Image (cartoon, rainbow over all chains, first blue to last red; front, side, top):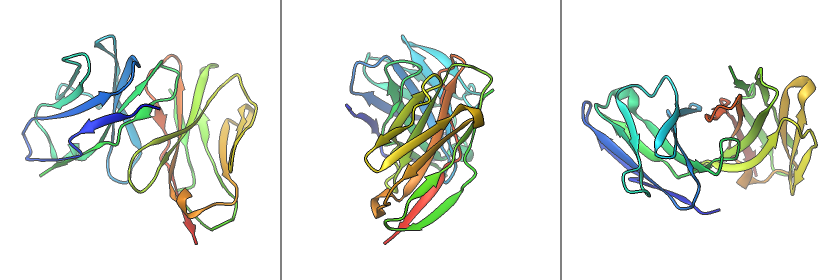
Length: 113
Length: 114
């Protein structure tokens, strides 16, 4: 399967700063997702994105979060004002349909200090 | 609501032993999809298998096999003749009800000792 790339691999930021995590799904899949995994815990769904708009989001995905696909390829997750508890691994994923398997990127480790 | 339970937090086996990872799911929907993902120490999530609720046939892929039983709401994963490279965290996951999010279990950490 074609890969999903994510940049950066590791981001360190100070509390209150904005961060943008980037994902490039190398395929023609139409569904994109963001998940997070706090260290040692399970993977949690944040948001799904289809046809250039959010199709579903979790209670974690509050007003501090936003997603967009600004140029038709990169898929970004923005956290406006980071908190210590935002420290986690953030995974981007893609699939060809809502009931199909999702293929994950390698993740971005976000550390908020 | 959907829920996935992986009661085994950590399992250690000696190389070449068989090991079964348990997964119990909950959903009110009649149509749903189950998945297993592997997360090796390097951290990425690797897709292993997808099964829909209408297909209860067991599946075998090399040393891996999956036992799907709707009667007990279980989707267990067996590794035969385990190898050190199988050491990872294994997640069972569920999609149901037309939702797009994948609900993951808490994972089972498998350690295969040489």
